[in-house]
Length: 118
Image (tube, rainbow, N blue to C red):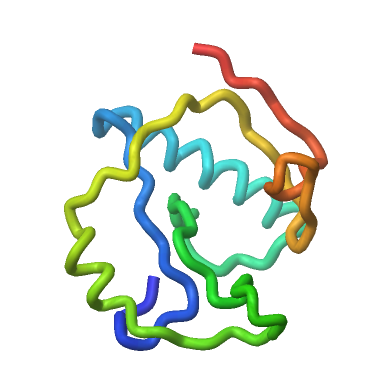
């Protein structure tokens, strides 16, 4: 999400559904949820659309004991893995997570989880 791949502090990969229609629907649901939170004063608007992504590397969580972000050069990684498919998953639920928290599963603590059925 940074224009300069030589100075990033977080490296993301884009999330994509198997077909364009599912992609559009997923984006629409994410945007509508974000809009509800914005309209009710729970979040500030940062972008027109939610950026659907997975975080691959985040310099804030490195293991050297520092709590400061450090930029790194991701250009080699981006070039080497530009066509890499990281796998697929099943969309099981919509979770509202607490930032800067850690649950028993190693991911964020969840305030609520809404099951999604197909």
